[in-house]
Image 1: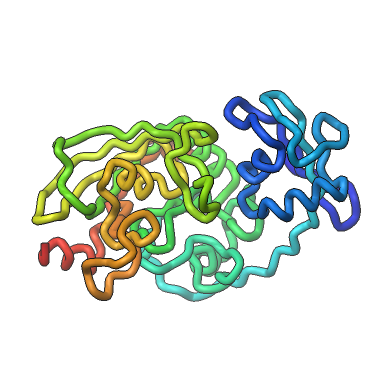
Image 2: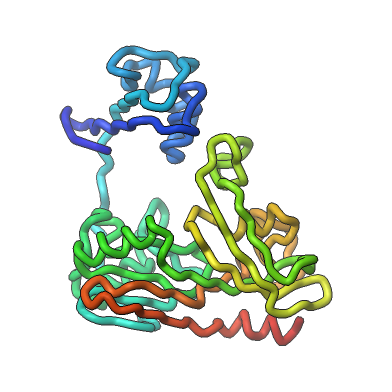
Length: 310
């Protein structure tokens, strides 16, 4: 929860939950991955962090139920401009929009990517009529997929639709089926990876199976076709953690083809950029009609050609 209180500063408050115990500085790093450990320790020294209303140290122990407050410089959000970027629309009405995102497109603006994103495109297409729950940088965005992942992204045009879809995501009732090509050949035709995901303790830019501080993550997979050294699979998400499919498949020895972060650094396919992962099926209960809606994003050309080669 965040509230503005002092000029130029923003108070960010957390009520700690189970699984967030440990050293204070490590706990904050897990809660706010945009802050480095050294910056967090500097904040603590300068009195910009309180624990249960009092002063604290970087090594102070924290436990579930503790009240943690941080004073941060208020972010200056840039103006995001609408851009006339062609969209592959799978479904649209007055409440929601489902777009087939191409490879290489970032979903929402962030440092280094303030133009050419999906948000820039939908701002133009929807003439600014988007939900505002996630602020000016993420209007209408209720979930996202990685830059190099292709396929279905659901955009909400108003706050009521946003709240309804967000509740379905939280309740794990939205249908999300992905297609992927992985290294190796799984021994079983289908299986489930049930392993919590959190920040990689040794590399804050990566996610990892983290049984101490991770959040519940469940991925169901099914082998569609086997090749020499590779497999074409379908993955169904039960939860939606950052990089979930990429982390889970790598954790069982079958990283995604082209994924240099969680798989081999050298890609065996020349010219392939990023992981071969496609969000194909997206199903949800419509926020106004209550009817089930399902869309299917066709495999992109590069993906189809890879399957033919294999």
